[in-house]
Amino acid sequence: MGQDQTKQQIEKGLQLYQSNQTEKALHVWMKVLEKSADLVGRFRVLGCLVTAHSEMGRYKEMLKFAVVQIDTARELEDADFLLESYLNLARSNEKLCEFHKTISYCKTCLGLPGTRAGAQLGGQVSLSMGNAFLGLSLFQKALESFEKALRYAHNNDDAMLECRVCCSLGSFYAQDYEKALFFPCKAAELVSDYGKGWSLKYRAMSQYHMAVAYRLLGHLGSAMECCEESMKIALQHGDRPLQALCLLCFADIHRSRGDLETAFPRYDSAMSIMTEIGNRLGQVQVLLGVAKCWIARKALDKALDAIEKAQDLAEEVGNKLSQLKLHCLSESICRSKGLQRELRAHVVRFHECVEETELYCGLCGESIGERNSRLQALPCSHIFHLRCLQNNGTRSCPNCRRSSMKPGFV
Image (tube, rainbow, N blue to C red; front, side, top):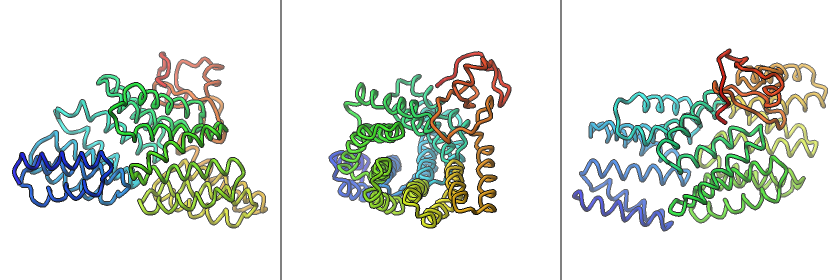
């Protein structure tokens, strides 16, 4: 297969993919891999396969094609191709919740010298790194990475990247419900203003994050409306990862309404897809919701069983915030059951997690995340209660003693 024919087949696959004929598109692209000797064409089709498998939730396949793409980039001896392939490898590991590997590959991307694509892909690298730091509950580093990604987006007029970063910031500020809603709403505005030619996945993504924030705020009707819109698009496009997240959100909404009979099967469906695609952090979130349902039913032993499974997964992926929440739940259960020794152990681990994640206000000393709080980040990316910063009039960060003469970025 020659260079021109390779290009034609790649374009044919893209047209099929954009018209939701995903399996036919994959068939065309796999034929290109089998028959084409054009290395540049093979590199491009591998990128298409990485993206398609990512959106279908086939993360192990995504990783496999990313590895082959790196080998192809090395054959081409092109730094731009190498950067792109390492970014795909980072994203593959991010989806599989291998966050330390994601950070390592992102650092490799940033260390590649003089790539033309650096200005275009640097923001995407920073976003992936921020998502990985967030997955590890390293909040200061996550915020620093998200801020870098936003700067790339603004400097390059990249509204797509800005939209994705705003959705990640919505997740970052899950303990400040107003900011958790503000950033996805900003993402939705970007889709409305600039997204006429974008994939509908950007609208679906912003609607999902808005649904999560609305639920936290107790606006359950709005949460359900946004989640239904996101799920509709996810079903149209065969986006299994987003379907799983929407099912989890539906379950949380029903739990917030006290409708546990409806919540349980939604959690089961979400868990089924999360397990299928390998989203272990998603499985932790499902089990956390299930445990809260059992607690509401006063079935404390069943709640503890769900918590134990969730703790194993949370420790496996290194997510300290989930561990903190699970120890908090275990603490309340042990207190009600009169299990004093176990209670003390969970109290100790809870405070250890608070210290490890720096999820406390350096001014008042209270932990952040136990309830809704208005938060503010200083330029050093340490986070405090907004009221504490206003009351103390501080000009430097109590956590790192670094000067902070200008307002916070977010």
